[in-house]
View 1 (cartoon, rainbow, N blue to C red):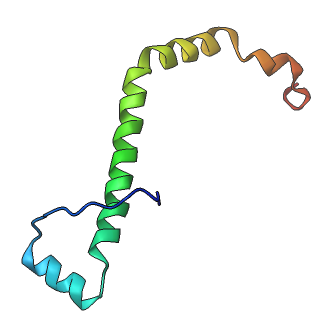
View 2 (view 1 turned 180 degrees about the vertical axis):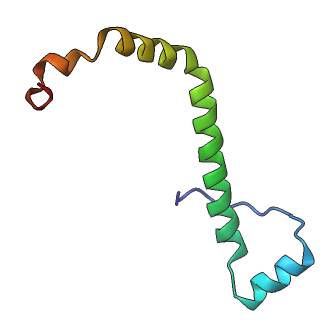
Length: 78
């Protein structure tokens, strides 16, 4: 994880989940950081794919029509 400074946040959590987490001695801050980092990564990837959708489709179309540049240099495909 990043060495960024930490900041306090007030959250609301279902009582049963909080009780179970305490029973299992789960570090709530670390668990939230890990889950939040994963969710942010997923959303950034989705956003990147959406922003680059046209370029990806154009590249795939180019490959479908003309093949890969390296096709002529690969000896194992001949």
